[in-house]
Length: 255
Image (cartoon, rainbow, N blue to C red):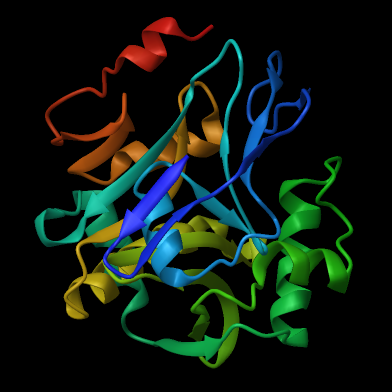
């Protein structure tokens, strides 16, 4: 594989895992393609890779590479053309009276970890991410080579949501968001995405990268609700406005 940009031209080795259980769908066996763990990584390199459908988890950069399934599709929002739905505007407006947002550096914070553990134990009680340790948390979210931030959302000075974001030359990557499960009715996840869209736009960036949209996985379906949306299909980004259903060859070939 060759990646290139103005400041970073190199060949990078890729490593494919053996088959393992899929994190999103019940039936398929999954495989993952990783950038060489020993390769020198940087924000500039990651910008090139995220534009080719890759994603960060901890210090590693990866993308799905399943043999018989291509359902995981990278998506991004062109922030200057984004138009919120009525329901999204309602979520935004209901938080504005007493919302405090603070951008923190990406480092361990006990208050953040307590919220993360509460979220994981509520959302994934029987999964491998339940009962997280501090090491689990740091390995998943923090990377020394990446320009990352933890965005705090507070109401009346009480922390209720944290969005982990990577700052890239042309956009923001939404790494992960966790929140107080007792606040679910106020849609803190939607609030966090809307804030990231506004933040990218205010910084003059082009994109909010939302990771993988997985058709058929209820937990991932929300990513198609932000329009227009661009999907990475057959090596290029294709845009779908709010009036158009996402139809791409990968989904026709999957399953």
